[in-house]
Image (cartoon, rainbow, N blue to C red; front, side, top):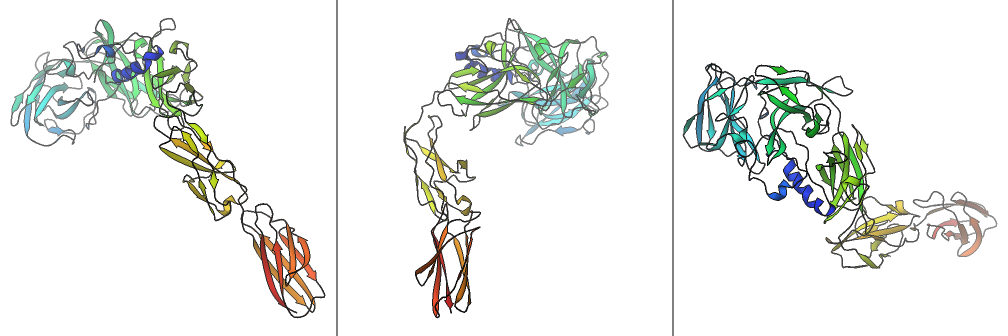
Length: 584
């Protein structure tokens, strides 16, 4: 992938949407794994369009090239992977099987021609989609320096990587972009020899803040500077994993470098040696001579933090989904700003976002449909409010209010509800009338103003849980080119529920005692008045106490009679009746 590029630029609001997109294309790159479009000096002359050259400066992105091999692409200090010397090792399974050829040769030291054992010799294939070179097959030299391995037919670049020697790409290049293509035909045997120079090295330890054990899954990358169209640029030239004991070692030729400690899983903040926020101000580290090392290049890592917030439409005040949110860093000074995009995300349906970042100072930009604003400023990132990303913590409330190019719904007639608000009945929502005409609608039923979980259909069957409560529905029109909107219906009357009444009688001579209980689902204690009748004739009117009533009637006529209690209803409880037959 291409090198990261340093570019001086201002970001006016109208141009930001375009430049930040290009910045992501130009910046999200493995620096040092140059593509076939690079010139002999490692630059990419002619490989970029002029708009790309105008992208803002951003940080380099250290990484390992993707692929199935567990060893990093440029890890000269990696431990043995368990294969015997001189054997062929196949890497990856996604490449189609087919005809193969053979690569063989001998690797010697350039200071006397001694055979070099345990040198990895790898064939790298270029993947245009990812813009990277991936090791596809490789072998290891035997004691006499010889190697031999088979590889599918195709075009490759051949790398020689040893623990104590400088990495070399055939024929004698330092970078893969400077190497030459090697085409392997079916059945062909290509002889490719190499002589490797001793390397110097950088070594040190990595620890985690507040922890007694080293941070897991971290790596260390080495960058060198080069000239790109007359400006200073950086490319990755070496990378290695940090061992379980927290130690690492990077082999490379003598020179001046900058070192970054990073975590591919983005748990730990990137740390540039010297404590700088980016490569542009990091401390130089030197490898002074072959066979010599620079020790004590150590780092203590802290966890990444998050920035969270909500973006709303200036037009509607509603949450604004689909807004791109950028975490932006100043790579220059307060007087001479130089802004670049670090990472980005998109707001969800509720207009919320969450961005992960390394510890440091940033600002946040919000962009959609050609409109741009910054946190704390509508003008530019120079005037925006500084946002601090803190180790292992969320920085909340970083909200945005953005102009909205979408059309706005106009409510012509509000939604209504039809049906009887009674337990067991079904209510139906009308959509109301909107302009412009919606393509579809969504529904959310509410009880006493609170959403009913899962109630998102046009109809709602009332249950005992809604007894005594008032129902409404919120209707949201949907149309791709129109801002979100919603309107709620008026609330229904309290949902009614039928009572359950039980009337019992106990007779003694011409006296009778009647006991009544009245209950209703969802109602703690039914209240109201009850009329007592005998064969249709009113005898008494009683008041329910704790949902119960009791009456003793004397001097009742002998014979067969029907006693009946009628309840008039009260609150959410509907009228009801119960009767009992008695022989006196």
